[in-house]
Image 1 (cartoon, rainbow, N blue to C red):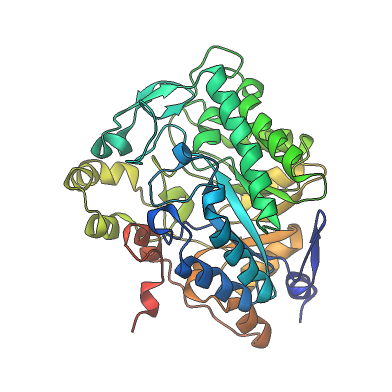
Image 2 (image 1 turned 90 degrees about the horizontal axis):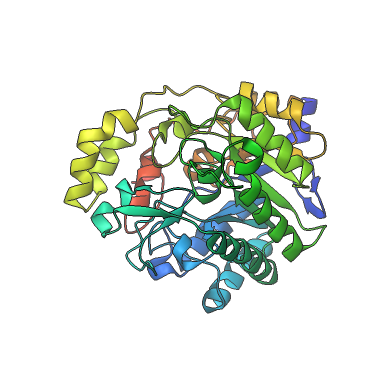
Length: 398
């Protein structure tokens, strides 16, 4: 066994948390929260991954408030779901694993038909293309009071999550969600202290991070997922993204996960491989949304052939910029060769589709040096977020 393979499977520390290895299940929205409540299938999914040997599994999209959900089927952090959340964290612990929750807010692109208020809010006014079919065609600009409110929501959600048994939290600064909308010059056109130069655009995200740290304490791990680039004209560039990482590092984040793309404008930059469009057209219930996908689909779902380690160059630039935070690689690490390459340079690795294909990946790879996962990056699992039963690997279907 090579030294890098040994490093991958060896125990590791993330702030005050001991992990049994350096493999983290990435937050991939599960679609298993009926009516916004964590369901038994969500618990079973993360229990199985923990039984499969990962060091840390991440529960996707734990919205910090009700208005922070893209869809009403997403959960938000509040006392009404405590028993279900505690059942989930307990199940992971009993299986020998640790569990993180991805804290997020959708900002200006809500499709939530239970939305409370006049319209979704982001950094600047804009058309909410994804929300038109839900009766939310416009997004407004957050006032200072609105920003203060959501910062407090991040604090309160983190406090709840720690008390409900989460071992870590992952703050979502990327993929076009609420905090990312302030970071990106494409969506942030403000002229006050929250807009303009990068240091101003980072003011709100850094306030959210500070609020989370205040809630969880100094020894509780906080990870942050950020974008290396939006992949759209006028969006975040890698040069600025490196500085975003530096600011998060300076603010005391424990681990940085450099990703890329935007869920609402260029999702294939994140996924790579086969287009999500055909499967999403098949599963989308709204005739209006299907029409929009057909008209704008090729522009939104661009062609990015899959390749291993597709974010490696950008992640290296982030690594060279940060001074104290750990670096968690994500982006096309699905073979043992790729994982060993990652371990030469980084501290942790996140895996998504590989663990959807085989939740027992870690145990299987530890037992067989020639183990091949078999994920062909068809991306049908990602489209399954529109399916009533949530995500699964369709290649595993009988």
